[in-house]
Structures are given as structure tokens and as C-alpha cells.
Image (cartoon, rainbow, N blue to C red; front, side):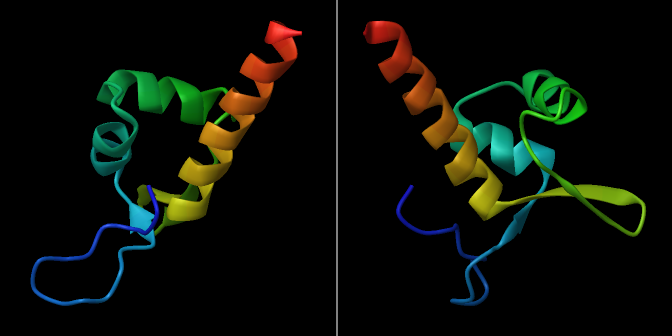
Length: 74
């Protein structure tokens, strides 16, 4: 995940993802993403009536998982 997905109609990177897009990017199910959002392990923002997940939140979530795995390996 070096850079955010781009919208197929433009070259502007997508900075806010739907839970479905985030699930696809993380290789998780949609329900699991909603669970992570509810547990505040994956940060999301409200845009109108919708929830969106900042791309940086995905990066931080993965970094947190890696840090946890490193700590458990010791």
C-alpha cells in the first residue's frame, strides 16, 4: 500500500475510503471493518451521514498490527 487508490476517471488519489473499499484494501470482510471502526481500532470520520476511513488510518492500523506482532515475537 504505497499510495492511495485512484479514481478510474481521474488521477487524483482517493484519500477517504468507504468501509467496503477499506475492507478490500486490507483483505478483510466488510463486517470486520465495521467491527474495527466500532472498537476504535480503525479510525473513521463522518461525512454527512456516511462513514469514511482516511487512507492514513489504514496505514496506521497496519503499522499497529506490525508493532504488536513484533512485541509478541520477543
